Image 1 (cartoon, rainbow, N blue to C red):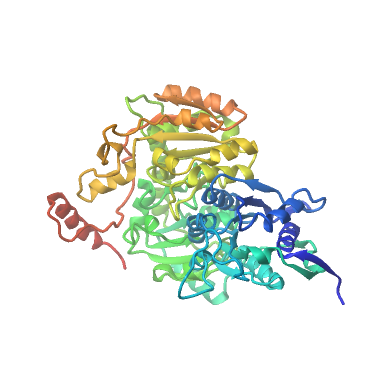
Image 2 (image 1 turned 135 degrees about the vertical axis):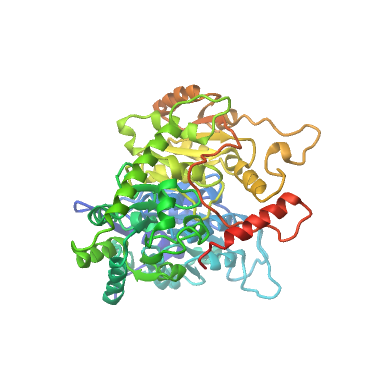
Length: 623
């Protein structure tokens, strides 16, 4: 009979997580879980809270607990931590029942969309139902088993409710399997009823033995591989679209080798940016709605697109109009994504897939020389254009491109380790086009869910994963106002961020989209919103950040911004800089059509005209 140890369910859960290890290279290992973010309440403080307290300074397997200021924010930080670790390390997040749990829902959806692992441990109501209804409990008259945690089911890759301590013996291995599955990873939710958290059980002692978690890279099937190579051989004007899967499969070297050997230009999605160095001769830059003119021009004429580890969302494909006439090979470890857009699916790890294709192609295939030469010329011209756009200039009201240029100039050769973090609004488009990095992961953009409020919390998670990098968060005033409390968390943890707030006094991105759809400015910019007698607030973001404990200042010009960035880089703690920016101006170069439905009938003439343009653009969709 195997030895057992008597633990509460919560103690067993924490001990199991703390013992999991990954290969860190050079014979060393590292914890799979970097820690647990926790905001305690009556659904988790007595059970899980006690277990985390006992494990925090464990001699062999410590598991740190981090306190945050917002449940959604701490989940964003945990997700960013996993993304910065290329999904090889992760965090858990726990919140109390009721609003604590439901505050995690937005972040759970974000993790699901972006295929990023995070373990969610929301407290739940009593299984015994003895004290029902407890504070914050949602009651369903039609189903007594329902709690707010059931809302996590469609948002989670795996969901379980632990109603008996013994269920951990099956639930935890399943959860870890999903979290570390390179094809199907995403958020896992284990709902933890508060009475069950405190129940004791005799667990097998070997259940808590340290275990090395492996990440399995799936090779391509022979039939699919041969079909893909045959299709590739028929191409004369191929284009690679590199997605996040290139980074997650550590395929940067394989991508560079493949592109160079066969003369294939490379364009990058938001998730794939930084897979190839910005100054590589075959780097065409960003693709799609936020894309460069070089990448989009080649995409429009390519006869084949080799899509590597990308979800092919509408911003990448120009709502299926950008490369509608090209044949498509989808190399993706996820079967669901490999079948997108009726392309030829090659389900495999990106690195193994590229290496396998190269082994069959050998040296007897290459893109047309004219296509290759054109790609080299277009890429060189775009790099020169980026230099021009981001060069030092003064304007009465700078725009995002001016700010990005100042940030990149503010460093020196050591700033190759800079990581820029963003998420929503105008900045994703500008950064996708203009940010230059040669470091995989040096561009950290959450654009699968484009979640306002991710930026600062996400920056915190990146800094936790990459403590020696300078993490630069670029955020609009709208996103800052939605969620900024993790500035205080960064101060408390001693994790320095540089936060640039670009204040265009409203939702400038959507304001421009609204006008492009034929409407007048309405309810987006402060000036166009319903207001009381006192009018719109004059917000001093620097004073607000200072109140949270950060170093902070307001600047008006690019020259002042450059000086402030010197102080920010020299600072030992989080530093916030705010600059007013032009809400109307964007980088005009590049971009392509994006489908946003326009009313079929309207009293407004500009809306009717926009509808006509909309119908005309839809003719180019290859659906």
